[in-house]
Every structure is written in structure tokens, then in C-alpha cells.
Image (cartoon, rainbow, N blue to C red; front, side, top):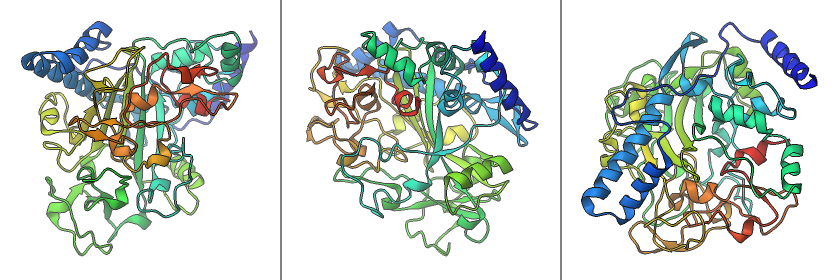
Length: 471
């Protein structure tokens, strides 16, 4: 009875503060993409992975198509517009989902499964702590690799089925996590196969950041450096100019001069803000942003543009990992994506979401290794997001191991452009004792789910966000 009173009190206080356009979480819709199914069976996905690394060329090619079609199907579905409207704009599916911060206040007691359907305000953009997590050495202040990381804002989100699991199992409660560990559990209860989680990154375009009152300088990814190293956006050789007034005929060109006063800008290097997934800030969002970013002067009506998103699905034990980023060359994106991947975008993917590149990490190495008892041998699969991980140095990836690159040549695999989503997330754990031996962030490598480093910790089903936000 007490837990229901807690829920009702929380819901009442939340609803009383709601703006006219309240947000209600919706399930992943069917995007009507031929050949796409969610959730796909684990056996099917594992077979794709096997065929990619071990099958004859024809079977490997089919597996490549199936795998990438699956990733594009997820992207198509979660970027679809819903009937919900906030601040005059239709919300996309992913925008309706819950952040862990929204759940953290109410998961210390067992609550009603009705929580995922409760309406609430649009999720606030928050500053990421990802760029400091796992570092043994503090990054040099003002270094080109990390420059701009303080302006990267976004959120982690969970779909309704993942939200329900978190609430039922109290996975954002330190007390509940401690109880699991003390009972001898080695891992949290696994999420259902329908669970999805994402991490998105936005750039907030304020009036102060515009050139001539309309153009925003967005660093544009043009591929990794020839020598693997920390490669943050400030180091990239060109920019795309984003016109908040809708102008620009850009279709692949970038400005490699990038004059701060806009004198190097051309119509061909300018892209309308509508070419990106975006929304305009409400007065509440602007105030929240300014509180998170000292010195910022965001106002209602300013744009938040989506530059990057990681998406993970619990369809397999090690989750499927796909990452997306905006690109001025969506038909021929740079590594870690490819023209072949872009060519598999379904016709149902239209508008701004079609201007994003994709890379997949359904395994850590190829040929693949088993979930337990494998070895760090084989060619690494590099799956990273330029706007999120490319800036990582070895200090951010302290548990990296040398191995081979995708070309089979020796590689240190200890910087962001040599990362793999699964390699890092499979090491996620809750470590209340502060054990120095506990797994930490890593570049592309193999880790078994039975790795001895997990001793004394609680595995958290590959989601670093749970122990980082639990309280």
C-alpha cells in the first residue's frame, strides 16, 4: 500500500507541473520495413554473426544485408513521428521514452507497472559524464581532442518494456543492487528481449553561437586519422554550416577553411536545419540547459539538433549495438560506416532520419568468439560514434588490450577510433567495494561474460548507465 502512495504522490506532483504537451512513452512501432522483425530471434541474429565471419562469400553477403537491414529497421521505427505534440512539434518515438534520471526518484520501492504510461514533461538534456568515466589520467585541459566535450548534451533513454523491468526489479536502487550482491547473485535479472536503450547527443544552437544570426558551424566527420589517436570534433578538418532559417543546398560538401566569421561559407557547404532531427527548446528546457551549462544563454525557440545516437537491443545476450550520426554525405558515409551500409536504407526511412550514417557491433571480433570461454583473437570490429567516442584517448579506455584491427594487422585498440560498443559494455558492472580489479572501459577486445575480473562485482546486463545513476 505504501509503494502505491509513493507512486501516486510522485505522479500527482509531476502532473501538476506538466505543460500543455505532456509526453507519454510509446512502444516501438512496426515500421513496415520488408524483412525487418523486432524482436528478432536470438538464434537468427547469432547465425548472421556466424555467417559473417565463417560462411562462404555468398552467405556472408546475405548475413551482412540482413544485419544492416535490421539496424536500419530499428532506426526507422524509433525515429517515426507519433501523434504527440510538444512545443508545436510532433514527438518522435524515442523522444517519448524515459531517462534513468526520470526513474531514479521512484525506483527505490516496488511500483505499479503503470509507470511507463504516465505522462510527464519532455526529457531534459544533460551534460554527459562519459568523457571522464574510466579515466586513470585527467585529460589535459583545453586539448584539441577533448575540446567541445563540455557542450555535448543528451540523454540515455529506455523504451517502455525496459522501463517496466527497471521499475519492477528496482535496478536504479543502490539498496536493491546491494541486496542482489549480498545474496550471492553475479548479475542483475536480465532484461526482456523487447528491451531497447539509447544514448543520444545533441548540439544546442543558441543565438550567441550563430554567425550572421543564422549559421551554425558544425564539425563534420570525415573519417578517422591515418594514425589512430584521440580525434575529437575540434580536430576534424571541416565543418558543415547549419542554417536555422532553412537555407542551403549542401549535398556532400564541407567547408575545410571554416572561417569563424563565415566568410568561407558557401551555399554548397550549407545545410538546412531540417536536414537534421531537431526540436526547438521550450522556456523550461532552455532554463534546464542554462542550469547545466554555466554561462550559456539558451532561450525558448533555440534549436537542439541530434548529432549522434547509440541504440542497443536485448535481442541477444550481449545485446545488438548500432550507432548513428548525422553526415553531410548520407549516401557515401565515412568509416566506420560505408556506402554498402547506406545502400541498405529502406524506402520507409525518409526525411531527416535518412541523413544519418550507421555502424553495427553485433560481435566484438571476427570470426566471432563465444559468450564465455573465448579468446582475444581475430580481427576487431570497430563500432564507435564519431561524436561520442572518437575523442577517447588511452586514459579513457584503461582496460584495453592490443590485438588486431579489421584488416588483421596488429593494433593497440586503445583509442576511440578503435572502439567497439559491445567490447566496452560487456564489461559494465556495479562495484560497491571499489575493487581496483573490476572491469572498466575498454577499446575493441574480447571479454567473456565469465571473466574473472567480475569477481566481487555485480554484472548489470551490459548497461553502464544503471550503476552510474543508481542511488
